[in-house]
Image (cartoon, rainbow, N blue to C red; front, side, top):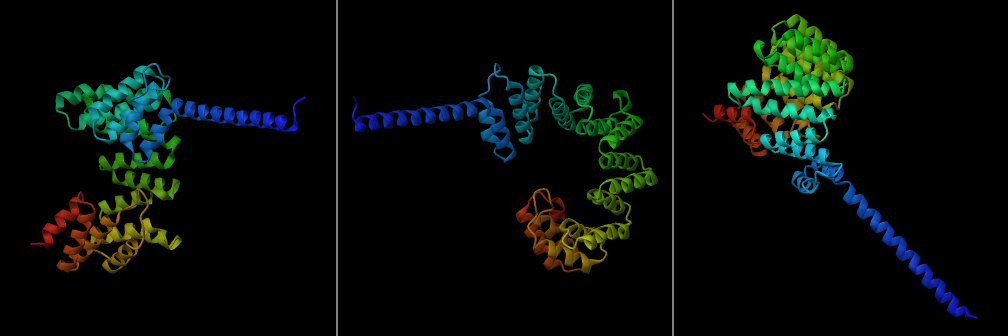
Length: 334
């Protein structure tokens, strides 16, 4: 008969081995999960501005892997982001070849061809036009609720010559489809169509309907008024937003911008821009560089060239792509 000490030692041995086995199983599960989901991991990396790491991971996915089509799609997205449009075209083609039932693949394939066509000669544009149109139409067929491919089709019908299928009536038809899916966006598309066609009464009607459907689109209506030099209407829209929410920083910035472009209400414009510069903009909100540029334009309109120059220089230092800031700096430096 085993001694109590021996029995205890044996049980301890068994418990230790069970713990080791559990640890091994957990590690194997983690390892399997990591190796089984490279596309999801790459997608997260890409969305966190780590395209190079995402690309390295996606290139390990073989064409025998069930995630291959998705891997090619995300490689295409990375290439598009890097402005390597020829590579993006190849990746999206590979994704579609591997799985021709995903609307998003066709949407981005069409977008890529459209981007390539934008810098191509007339002959190449003619060759790409039917391919991009077909890609967006296929995306719509696969996903009847799709907004993005419809927006691209609206632009196609507006910009393509009649011989390539361009048609204002078809653009309006597609925009009306968008109205049913996402009213504010559909009215925005219709407003843009009528604006391009110089049908300003109809354009204004659509832009007003857009803001009624979604007040977040108010800047679109304000921009329409600014282009028509109806600055009071633009100011009033943004001031109404600030009245409802005194901390609506986007509306505050837009008051400053409207002042800078119109030369009107300069005191109010300066006040708003200086307030905006105390705020940390979120992603996709106007930058401090843009705010400094607008403030410089106000100073320039006041005849304060020295202050304007400093502000233009500050704006360019933060963002050297600001064409208006460079033009302004050239003006006040003379």
